[in-house]
Image 1: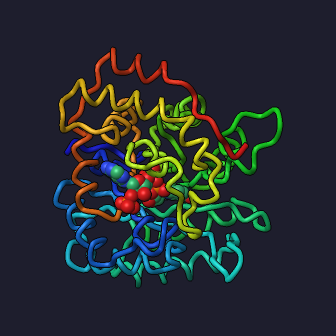
Image 2: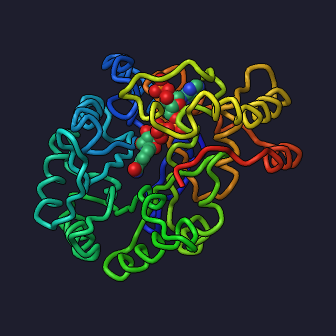
Length: 332
Ligand SMILES: NC(=O)c1ccc[n+]([C@@H]2O[C@H](COP(=O)([O-])OP(=O)(O)OC[C@H]3O[C@@H](n4cnc5c(N)ncnc54)[C@H](OP(=O)(O)O)[C@@H]3O)[C@@H](O)[C@H]2O)c1
């Protein structure tokens, strides 16, 4: 698989990564299968999808434990990307960016992952009680201590933190400029997909200008862009899509033209090509800095997603995707 660079540190990864979150978090618990997830991670490494994206809070903790079982045997083949800064309680998820906590959390992640170094350590969310420079300073000390290779920042809180009259990533960019004063940012992780393209306007260009990697989270629109979900089928109560405004039966029906467009483009490239692959190939073509991290717990989909790295879209394909209607239903 094509390799891409993360940040100035010249760390390289397979162009399509693997999002490990659905193995233990955010999607229906009843669908989680430990052994199948292990096979999916092994398959990703076999195919050169080396970037494994996890977080201590996925599970909580069980996602890192699962990856640790693979890393114990195949550490040298993998690029370990995990996150710190969110704590899961009984009823709430809270941010914790205190320096002492960050350092303890890193040691705990290293133990669970069965490794002595994390390749990319990402701040999951800013703690409103702690200046972000202090949290980032503690993370920088982890690099100096050799426990972490590079630092990243997640911009997933941007939608809820947005103030009226500002662009989606204005506050994220200000935050990035503050932490850059303390220690270099190697990667930014934010939502980017055919139906959520906002980061193309400001955040991705900001990263490109500085040689910073861009991990595209939710690149398949939480599964919608794959065309495998049926409007009205519903989601289990613990699935994030049960509360997501784009996943009501009405919005899923309204957004079908987007899937239909991806399917038309796929057909032009052959019977075996899927809308998911078109959605990933479109992302890969946006910039050599973009590394999509499609989430899955199934080896079969790991294989399908990895093959997207070989799909080259044409000018006609890009024009067709650009002409698709904007997605309906939003958190804003
Ligand atoms: N930093 C953050 O705050 C943050 C937030 C969200 C996500 N992320 C990262 O981004 C990654 C990706 O996001 P995501 O997993 O939420 O959304 P996603 O990648 O857009 O979609 C995941 C969903 O698509 C399904 N899927 C994957 N490949 C498929 C294929 N080829 N055909 C049909 N269905 C397919 C998966 O099903 P199965 O699970 O059944 O395989 C899963 O339900 C996460 O795993 C996580 O690493 C980070």
